[in-house]
Image (cartoon, rainbow, N blue to C red; front, side, top):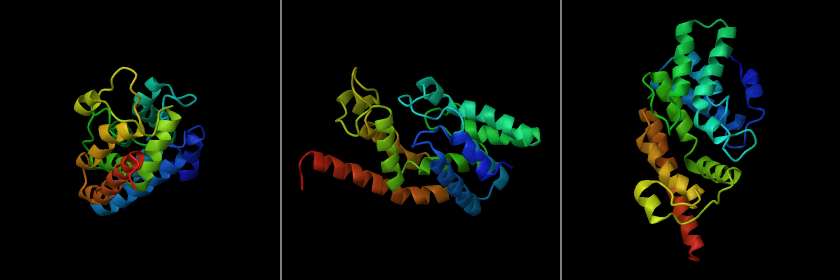
Length: 217
C-alpha cells in the first residue's frame, strides 16, 4: 500500500487546485464515506492517493496542456498500475484501483463507476468542489487558467452550456456548467447528505457575488 509520504512526491509539481492538500482531503473524505457505506479500504485509499498523480493541472499552468488535463484520469490510472505492480499487488486489485481512477472524472463518464470503491472515490473527489473549499478552488482554477472569476454568461451558454466565440469560461460559468449539478450526480447516500449543505453554501456565495457586482448592499 503506498504511504501518504510516498504519495506526496507525486504531487510536487501540482497546481494549487490539484495539489496534495486536495489529495489529502479526498483521502480523508473517502475514508469517511467508506466507514459509512462499506467498501475495500485498501483499494479506496490507493485510488485516492493516485487519482490525480499525472496531468491534472489546468491548461493555463506550466506543464498542464489541456489535452493532458482532459485525459489525466487515464494517465493517472496507468501510473497507478506501475506503482502497484512494483508493490506486487494482485492484478485484480490493481484493476480495481485503476477503474476507480478512470471513472472519477466528471466530464468523462465513458466509464461510469460500477464498483462501490469507484463510487466512493468519485463522490469524495466531487465533494471537494462544493462548499467553502469549492469557492476557493473554482476561483483559483479560473485564475490559473487565465480566466475571470465572474463574467455574465451569454444566452447561448445559459441555454446550451457552450460559450459564444470569445466568451471566457469564468468561475461562475464553471459553477453553472458543473458545480451546481454535482449534488445530483453523487452515488452514495452519505455523500448526498454532505453535499446538500455544501451546495447551499456555494449557491449562496454566487448569489451574493452577483448582488455585490450589481452594486447592491
